[in-house]
Length: 243
Image (cartoon, rainbow, N blue to C red):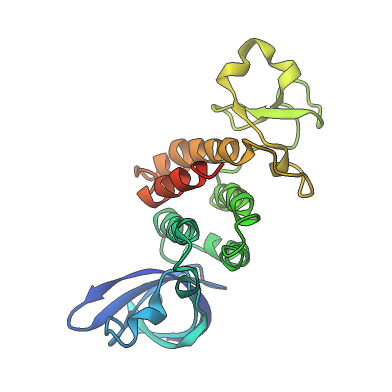
């Protein structure tokens, strides 16, 4: 069995002498793994840095077994271009770690994340844009994997305007004016997560990360009995130190 696709490198681990089991998010086949002979060599390992996009061909006996990757030159090298930007490198690490931990091998939902992940990775060199994109990406990750939030209308009144908070239990949006009695128990909902043209206000990135982080921990990763990857926690520390 054989197939070809583009893939975002999520990471890899050494196998035998010089081999590398490469983990990728493909454009059409979700998260996939394959053995790259000689992939751990000093000459080639930079090609497989997390966050790079590569063209690859997979071959194997059965689709659900570990096969072999033949990998062409990287279509897009990202990590090497971000070496002087610690926050952006933390972004690469968090993005790829969340995908590795949250997606099962061959999970078709992964392909729905490919375009958004590519866009986010390509914007990591723009510090004025990517933190907000990252929070939106986490919201999309939750939705793609079946843990999306309901931000369409107020859970109490049914109104679709003035939404300011989210219930940490139900994941449904509420109006602050409808929930004054227990506002301190709700999670703030930044306007930029509701309207694509909304300006990001001071404190919005922190509020957004707190919102998505709650549901990553208590829904997505609780469902698979894992903790949120440490790479995500390190990124939050870096981002919050800048705001």
